[in-house]
Length: 295
Image 1 (cartoon, helix red, strand yellow):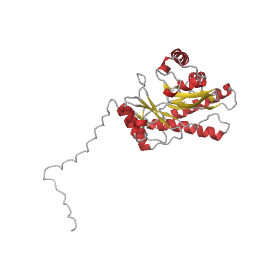
Image 2 (spheres, one colour):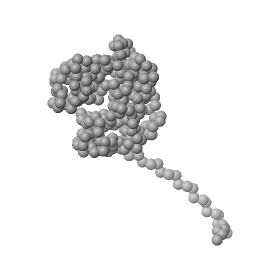
Image 3 (cartoon, helix red, strand yellow):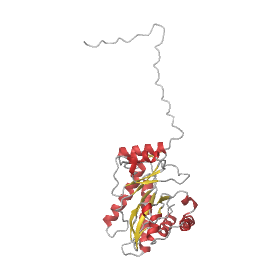
Image 4 (cartoon, one colour):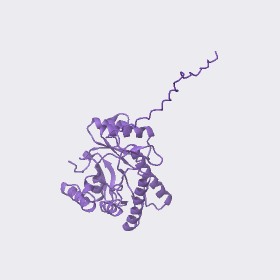
C-alpha cells in the first residue's frame, strides 16, 4: 500500500505557531577521579600511563609460572595474583610477539589485580655490532619491546645492550651512551611512557657492568632511561663474588652514591641461580641448584 501523506497541522486562529524545541545539549561525561589519563603514541592504540611506583619490594616471575596452565600472558597475571605475588616479566627473548587483544587483556588485569608488568627484550640485541644492519635491527627490537609493554600498561623494558667485540671499553661506552639516549628520546617523542632499563650482564665480553650502567644513567640524564640490576649476573661476572649480605649492601650503596636515593626506591631487579666459569655466565639455574646466597 502506498504510504499516506501527513497533512501538516494548522495553527489555531489568533495563536502563533509553537516554537520548535531546541535540541538539548548532552551533559558532559563524568570521568572517575581514579581513572588515569590515557596517552597514545604512533602505531598503537591508546595506553594507560604506567602505574605509580610501588611503595614496597614486589616479587614475581620472569615468564609464565609453571602452575599457570595455559602459557599466555593474561593467564600468567591471573595466576601470580592468586599466588600473592606482585610482578610479572613478559619474556620477549625470542622476539616481540604478542597479539593486540592480549595486550588489552594484560592491561586490564594489571589494573584490576595490582600485579605490575615488565618485559625482557630479545636476546638478539647488539647496539655496537660491527654490522650496521644488525645495529638497526637491535634498535627496532628495543623500541618494539617498550611499545608492546606500554600497550600492556607496564613499565621497565630490560635487555642486554651488546658486546665489546674486541674494542676498547671507553669506545663502546661512548657509543652505547649515544645509542641508549637516542632510544630514550625516540620513545619520549612518540609519547611512549615506558622506561628502558639496560641490564647488568654476566659475561666479561658483554657491555653492562654495574660501573658502566650507573655511569651511563648518571651522564645520559634521561628520566626514561634506568638500569636493571641482575644480582646473579654480577655474581657470575665477578667469578663468584658479590654473594654475601655485606656485598649486596655495597652494591646498593654504589647505586645510591652514583644515581641518588630515588634510584633505590625504583629498582628493576633480577635474581636467579646461575652457572659460571672463568669468563662469567654459562647459563641460569634454579636458585636451589646454585651457590646463589639468596636467603
